[in-house]
Length: 222
Image 1 (cartoon, rainbow, N blue to C red):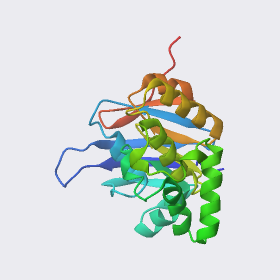
Image 2 (cartoon, rainbow, N blue to C red; image 1 turned 90 degrees about the horizontal axis):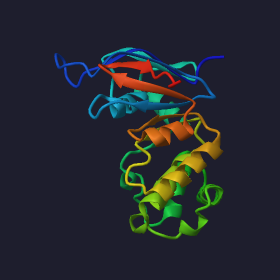
Image 3 (cartoon, rainbow, N blue to C red; image 1 turned 45 degrees about the vertical axis):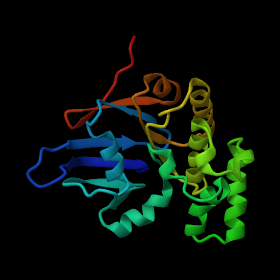
């Protein structure tokens, strides 16, 4: 069986002749993996997520999802619904008048009818224990509520993989613990970018570090 996500010799620079941020990244993520990715600010962690989702073009190398190479915009467009991308800035993911509409937005764009999308959105919110937020505006929620609402918007697409960019940013300890419990209860594979070592230690099955443009595994401490 092919890895769920495979990255081969991926390289990236912001412009021709500019210093390379990624210098031959290799990654193999299996269906049961929940990987944490750390590294200093500006090392290219978020850039890597942008490359995986086709928001930036690589300078060289290849990305494969479920065994299929992603080379063209059409390839990425077909794969994106299967990659649930939780953005670092939650407010960028909540833009509709109500949370219910935010969570239904993705399913509608997948081709579901409005009634089907609403039903899926309600079910997703209830599954995360935040059905009470359905009629509220995302801009009026707490940081923890916003993060869970944005996660619901991602999960309503029924993704096969989660890509999480600094998911505990601006969360207090109670909200962070709720996010940990939610992720651990989902059973979905993910790649989580975070500076929060405690969070990563509570949700991940493996750890990677991006350093000098390359990924390396982080060995467990004895």
